[in-house]
Image (tube, rainbow, N blue to C red; front, top):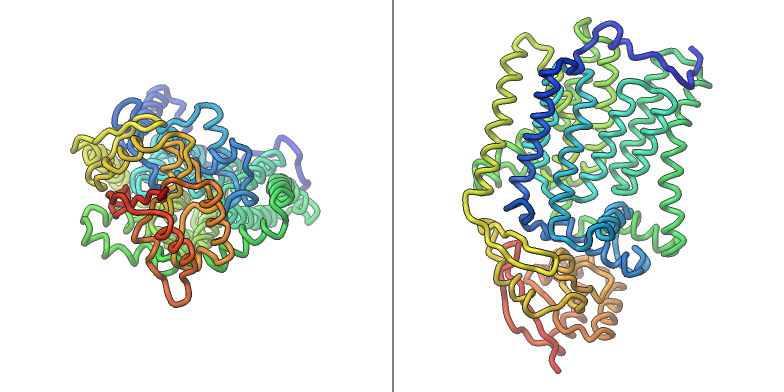
Amino acid sequence: MPFQLSNEPELESQKENPISYLEDRTRRLLAIFLFLCAFVYLHLTLFATLRVPFDLSYGDNGLGFTEAQRILKGQVIYRDFFDILLPGVPYLDALLLKLFGARAWLPNACLVSLGIGFLWASFVISRRLLPGLSALLPGFLFLVFAFHKYLDPTHHLYSNLLITAAIAVIAARRSPARLAGAGALCGLAAIFSQAHGVFAALALAVFVWWDATADRKEKRDILRAEGCYLAPFFVILGACILYFAAEAGIGRFINLTIIFPCKFWNATYDPNSFSDYALAVVAQEFFYHPYHIPRPLIVGLLIPAVYILAIISYRRRDSRASNGQWRQIMLLCAVGLSLFASIVNSADIARMSSIAMPAFIIAVWLIQRRKWTRGAIALAWMAVAIVMLRDIWFVRARAPVYVDTPAGRIALNPIAGNSRAYYQWLASNTHPGDYVFDATGHPGLYFLFGLRNPTGLWWLTSCNFTRPEQVPGVLQGLKQHQVPLILWSAGVDLKCGPNTDHIQPIREYLHRCYRQIGTFRDSFDSTASVWRRQS
């Protein structure tokens, strides 16, 4: 079959077994209503009032916005401050800060946008697999059972949204334009998370080859299809790498984005290892709160089991599903398994949740093919409604505590630890632009209070994650800027093993030049100590 540059025929599934695309006006209105319900659900669980957000600064998103502030002041990632990820998140956050200013609601608004984006992308994929409003069910299952477990707008969610969008682009047709679009989206996904983006790009490349081979295309046409897909991917990713390698130096860039993560990413007291596997922590969740079990259990059981089940079903396939539908399922399996491979060395519930969208689409499709479909789909919608209402009630069962910061008013959930006194003290004793060093790993404080980090590190550890060669730079920054306040915690002094504590010179400098003036409960519900510089 010759390689077609345009007007590529529609998939066989669209010819043999057309599915309703919600053309009925009532169904369109119901679909719009369900999208509105999703928006309301996300807003009510992320905002205490119309414009006052619940505090999310304790998450990794705080690091992205803090680095964005440094970027807007002319600093360059890798050259002027430490990071191990490609720069998608901080530069996107810098754009948001440029457009809206430092606003406390920005992380929450990003999460709402991400949630709606995932729902829409899943609908675009599912509407060719599932009839009517059932096409929205995988997206809603993802929102309430996976997305809600990871309310942190970080590289995992941004990258996986772009990958889901790439699947949506080529799910129906693999024309040159669509292949190029999918390649560009995977290139952008890699800029947010090199692991997710590269693994997904490889999976899509394998699928494109398999799909073209199944159509018995000539080798020349297959290579053209791969070229259409891979060229935008390498152009976008390559341009990013070349620019920042030139700015920071090729050696430093490779060390921070490749060598350092491979050697030291799992060196902290946060496991970041196979011991953090989602199913392994279900028992711990049971003792913390029984309601916390369903989410990690569902996600942990789905991934990767549902992909294996789908592949087995494909091998035993019958005529109930068209060839085009099976190809879409194999596309989802390929990408889903690649995303699981990208986190398999630390598949905790948060990371598993961020990659779960393909699994939910396949699960609903497999259920939909059974005789008891109608009852199962109805139960699934009922579960979605119950969990959504329960999440809203849980967040709003107790009155939040409000704190005013330079970035705006925020709401603190008293269940998560009373950090009000800590935030109020910082608001009263610091001013935007002040140098403060937070060694505790809570970089969101820089964003909320407009503070400046005098060092190139976002936290300190007594583990190999903080390297000996980084210590002189930290001391130089503290001395050069005569930093008035340092925030410390017991977690900083928690040793991970013998000969891993390299920060003793910083500790000695702290005790020699500073005195402890108070302790507070922070957003992690642990104790943070405040040290003031002695005159």
